[in-house]
Image 1: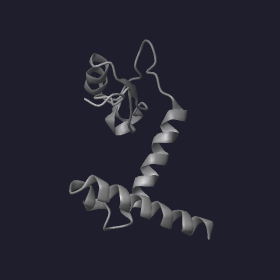
Image 2: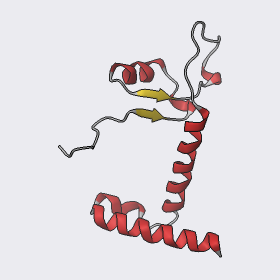
Image 3: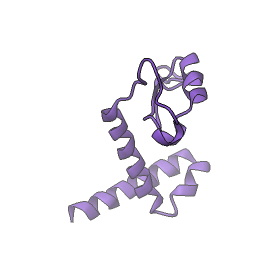
Length: 106
């Protein structure tokens, strides 16, 4: 085991599609904090009792990561590379980031 590397994440941020009691209980049993917004479409009646904890600022960070990966997927050669060699995927990801920053800065 590598020092400083966690086996389980400390927190999971997901979209409202993952708002299910089973998912929240699974994470709670393993000591993983869950940051999932309440899916109002799946609840017929509002839940009684203590409201579910949700941090919108942490959720915004998740959307930034999702946008990053959608940018990376724009480079079609990079997406399948992660299954072969980690170092080649990392190098191509850095190259894609440089290209994207170049596009943004003009």
